[in-house]
Length: 143
Image (cartoon, rainbow, N blue to C red; front, side, top):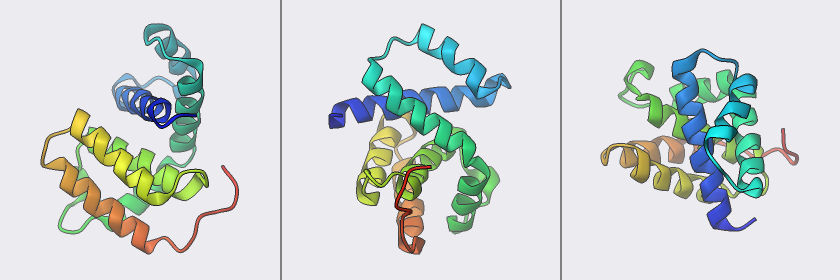
């Protein structure tokens, strides 16, 4: 898969996961409708689906790790879009052996530039750098 297809998949995953927080719908039910609404190439759709499923399956663990990496911030201060970007990046860092942590971080920063406030980029970078430094190793298989 090309880097541009992966970026598009991350964008779609971000859009879906962010919107999910407002609907209260089970993500599996909402995903089919999302794909009907947002035309996406199959290759990007597949990777976005893996990201969405991974983030949802590991949400509590991802949030706990993010919350532990906050310095000078309470979890309640983290915006929804920023938290969603952090979840996606951390999922890739921890569970995707095909995505180097630095790539996951850089892609998160690109998402932040496109979807978040300008000052959020530095915040997201700092949190993900801390999480990357704390990470002992990645598992050898995808979850």
